[in-house]
Length: 171
Image (cartoon, rainbow, N blue to C red):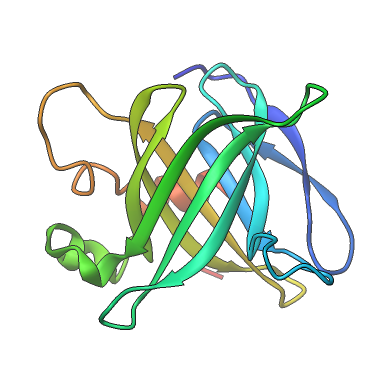
């Protein structure tokens, strides 16, 4: 992946702020549905491989075992009409036995995506901002074309994750 950073807005309930996202990083915030219940539950920016920014939207769904999952789309909003670049599904880490050992320190959710025809692995973790608001930060990584378990390879190192998103959990 490229090393270029993309400036994007951080949407919190209070006011938007600037964030630096590296390629493969994304953020999700609670979305105001207004009077339309079909709007996404979560929405935010995603920085794609080449450094361009798109929008990621997620809807909360529930599995048969009553665990939350997220399903959504990644769209390029730069044109006159939104262009869907891909779709994804994220599941709670406890639903995947391959990441149970890393779930305590690792992501809260893991899953798969297809973005611009490429298979991707995704991770997502809940974060709390200094003002007390909650948001989600995650990674999306390209999967090699060989047959592997993408969920096992989707978990970034905890210190790398904290450093990339400016989290100081030693304070």
